[in-house]
Length: 498
Image 1 (tube, one colour):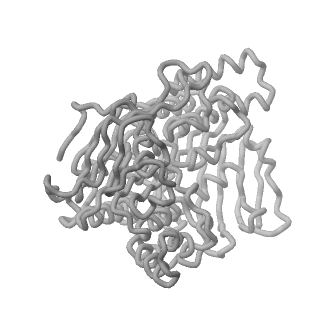
Image 2: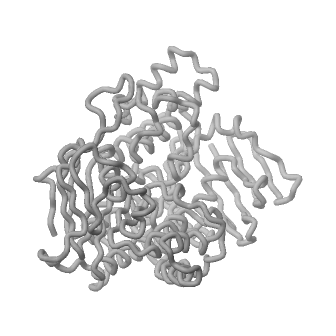
Image 3: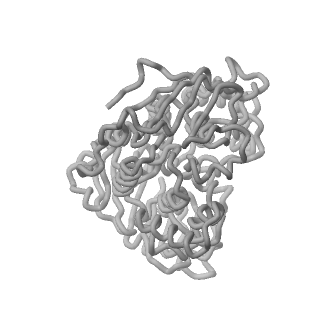
């Protein structure tokens, strides 16, 4: 059992969060912490994981109880420190952003999954059996010999979840565990969590949307602006009017205005993306089964005014295809033309004004000291004067509702705000082709609606958008058509024009 009684939590900006929040998770419970961006759900998850933030200037007043032990905090420098090694042996935590959770000490997926229990002394034979079992449950067996740093986003997400599940913790806390997963992978993860819960693990899942499916008896704690606004069964949460707090339900259609609905594309309009017989292979990793991942004979045409969703299972080649549009990956054969530019051996940076790329892990795109400097970097690199670049950056920030954050450090922002800053950087640079990798991952309902409008305006203004996504609701609402990839090939029967 774990219990949190929070009187107040503040980061170094002094804005209070989690005032009057009380949560108890007993053995076998399934609790959903729901809330829009900035609601405090990630802060709550980190507290349950024993991360009180005192070493980073944060202040927590309240108490955390794990089993029979209660640790009390007064928000003063003399507060106790939680031993992370001892705490994590009982409370496993999967944070947002799978890449940042890799140990960087494992050369294979099997070693990554085994890292925690191996360091706690699990016998080798038992460890091998446990790795095999969790890999089978999450359909990771063919990937066990792969380098975890070379997985797709969804494959990596399943790997870090497997590394938590294998520990058989008393409590498992997961922040956005389903982002970037295809439907089959999401079902595998849900089944693995349910198996843990049935064996007595308390499961806590943070999400911006209420789940469409969850175990019978699942509870919801909904947060808004750092305060609880609902607590009770999931079935009641769906009827509690939580949309007024920016909390929708997974699978519900977006509520979009007529100005966002895709308009017909001129079939004689300019072709902004032309891919012909694209072939690409990653080097085979030692011991890997099957053909090396890549693309085989891909043909794709996208015209001005068009929004195209690239869909398919994790590892199907969606991100790889997007990376060919701006030269991050180079074709073994075939041709790629983006925005009228034939992608050859030009430096990727030289293509930024033509093709804007949004990484699935957008944190890897952020490097400046302020949001304004971050967003104005692209226009300045393209040759624009500083004043003009900053004006362009402020317009992009205003379009995404980030104007008040121009002076903030990007890494002091929340997950969704950081993603939006990366998107603003792309917009400010002014490319005609947008290549977006899982743009809705982690976004709450207001942010998804805002993004839909941004993509629609870009297309109506003569640009085009290609987005790799597992968000079927968003794709159906915004895209003119979906193109399905599987095993590095486009499936003709899978294309779904609007």
